[in-house]
Image 1 (cartoon, helix red, strand yellow):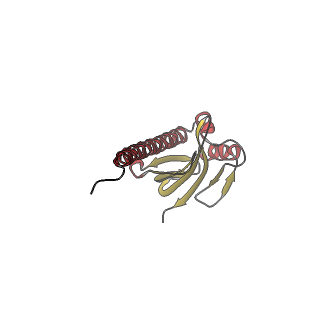
Image 2: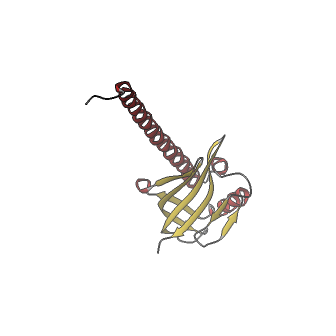
Image 3: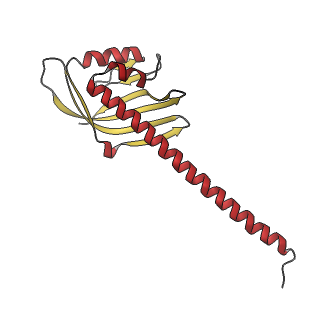
Length: 163
């Protein structure tokens, strides 16, 4: 038995092929966009770590989201609100022992919305007030990153000490 409308069958196959091609392109584009987000956020975090370890306020400040909405929950559960307050606290902390050693192989970035991502990484931190001996502490470092016209910045830092 022949098809009533053989020309439609050909069009249907063509539409299916186009649809699959468009889907593949969209999927590849999404993967490339995700890789870009992961790469960009990871690069911003690496700059953050380098600025911290160098105790470089000039390099650190633009990496933190401007304004009072930025916040940092420290390992002692103190919440520091605002970029200026955070930079002042970092400046004080840097007077003692201060070194971050992230496990970059375990770093994970999750894009949670357009222009918003969360980075999570284990960090071995060596911290101590000036004049006191420092011991390494395992910390889970999580950060919310936001992208604007200037690029990615750290919008929030959430730290948890590993027992």
